[in-house]
Image 1 (tube, helix red, strand yellow):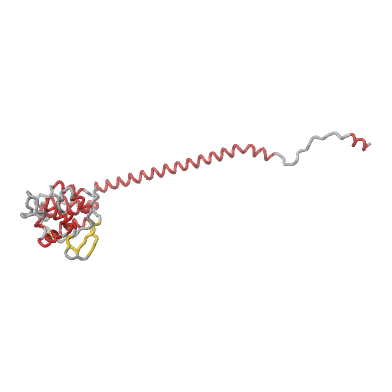
Image 2 (cartoon, rainbow, N blue to C red; image 1 turned 180 degrees about the vertical axis):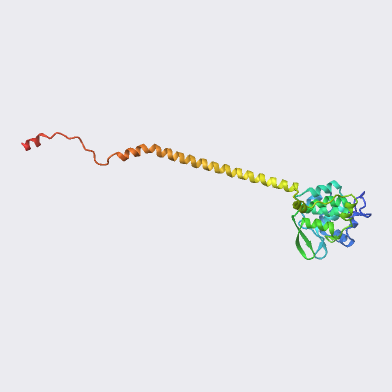
Length: 268
């Protein structure tokens, strides 16, 4: 019962959603310890906590052991959450492995038009992801992972369902032309996201310059006040110093006294 698809689940590409994962890989997931201990009775809400704890993406590694990322993918195929929940997974920018898990699930189960509309904006995400495969750990970027989902036939040791090419959807009018940021920059068109980031950086630089100007004005005011106090102090002391300049340092002459009688007598 723990390995069966939820009742009422809709068929994906004409088959059971769990059958999108190959039988050999699916059986290894059922036998893994992580599936038995952590994936039992998971819901669309409680699965978020497990996806946040994931530290790498990938398919199988070592002795054909499935990664936790692959186990959670099979659990999503088993419980088949609603589309709105998957979109919320994609919007959680702070949890990049949850976003990567939702992107892989969307690529395997959604229509081609929805896949392009939901995954192409993620090509602007340049954060690093750790990938674990048979050769060990490697670093990939989120935009590279999304591009591989849109172009390659096998991702994370899983065969991707075929989807129509973007050019065919554009010719049929189901999808608008893709706007390249590089081409827009060469033509001189402005990117709203870049303008928002630029305005944010300009605001921060302005606030920093204002704070530095205020601190400089405060220091200049303090120095001017110090100079004024010193000048006033010198002015207050200047009269005393001026008087001391013109005072003679020679001993003062005492007033002459009349000669005594004894001296007069001797002179006589």
